[in-house]
Amino acid sequence: MRNCCAAGSTPQEIATGAALMTEIGQFGAGGRALYGPRPGDAGRGDWDGDVP
Image (cartoon, rainbow, N blue to C red; front, side, top):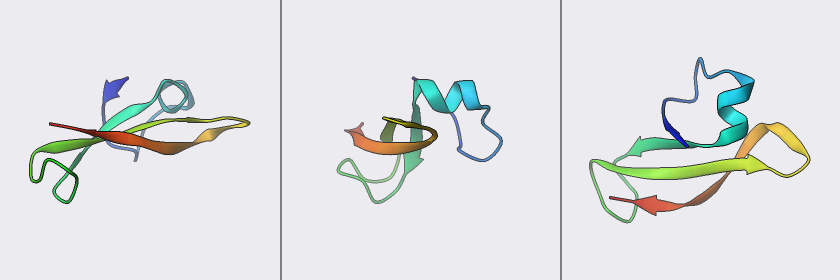
């Protein structure tokens, strides 16, 4: 899982998941939303949870 923004991510980076900054997640401003690869569709991610 890497710290990234979705725009400009490579297919390999999307396939390993991402921690995207968010202001509206469980931990408020500065928290991150976790996304992992969608089974059967490596070009898309599904939300996995929030972290501080």
